[in-house]
Structures are given as C-alpha cells and as structure tokens.
Length: 210
Image (cartoon, rainbow, N blue to C red; front, side, top):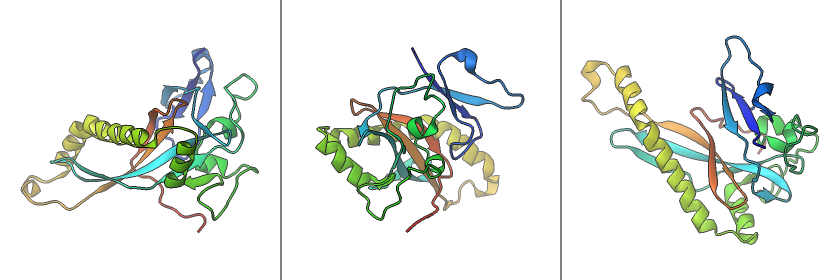
C-alpha cells in the first residue's frame, strides 16, 4: 500500500515532516499548507542505512541559462537501520528521514573526521561504495546531471519572470552580476535511479564540525 510523506510548505530542516499510510491520517491545520509526496519504499542502502545526496548547484545566468554543479557534495545518512514503514516504526524519523538537522539529535549519530563512514559522508566516497556494491556509477552520475538540468529548465520561465519584475526598467539592458546557490536533495532507489526530493533555494553552508 502506498505510503506518503507530508512536508510543511514553508518548513525547513526537517521540522514538521511526518509519514502517513492513509490519506485520512493527514492532519488538517488552519493556515498551514503541505506538500505530500509518495514515499520511496525501495531506497538504496549503504551499511543497511537509508541516505540521500546533497548536491550544490550555482545558477549564474537565466538568459542564457547557465549552471554549474559541484563535483563533490554530501551524503546524509539515517542513524538507525532501514525498515519498510509500518504502523510501529512510521513515527521514527531516524529510520525514514535523512535530514541532518534531525539525525544529529540521535544518540546513534556518528561524528567522524573520516569521509568514508559516519552519518555524514562525502559524495565522492559514497560513489565509491556504490560502485563496490555493483552499480554503474557513471550512469548514475549522468542521470543526476540530467535531473538537475531538466529541473532548472522546468522552472526557468518562472525565474525569468521574477528576475525581470525585480529590475527597474532603466537597468534591464545592463549586465547584472548575481548568482544563486541551490541545494538539490536526491534519493537513489534500489535500482540506482535518482529521485528528486526537493530543491533548497537557500541551502545551509554552516560548519558544525571541522
């Protein structure tokens, strides 16, 4: 049976996210809107843990559309072994939600200087682990790149409209120097297919540990 993940429309850092197995379980709140997505029940696992990828993308121009994607990024891990959602574990965020802001509160969170293990790892090292598990990493990377490009093409018309509305008429012919850093959160399923979870318009660049 389909499981759903409910996210506050204006939430951040995993706050207010919950999982339901029946649409009837949705909590209707006054003056609050939510985004409801189908829960991906077959995530790729490493060390038995669910994880997602955070990729950083820089948008430097809308006309023409120009983007750059960082060669490395982060992988954020749940802190308890993955189990398919059931009525008993559906309320446990440390199994189902990969948000760092949630999992860092878990007693099982692993802080380490190594980028090869722990609850937050480098994207490059996770790709090595994925390759070791038998996946074609080059294909996965191409699919991720394709996902990023198509996502930005899809929202480009709205971005252009917003950009033009913010510029005074006298400035529209001038060269505008600005950019936007975006955080793409991507989940890999058990077949190695990338699935876009969300795009963060103001991703955290904070360092909690060095």
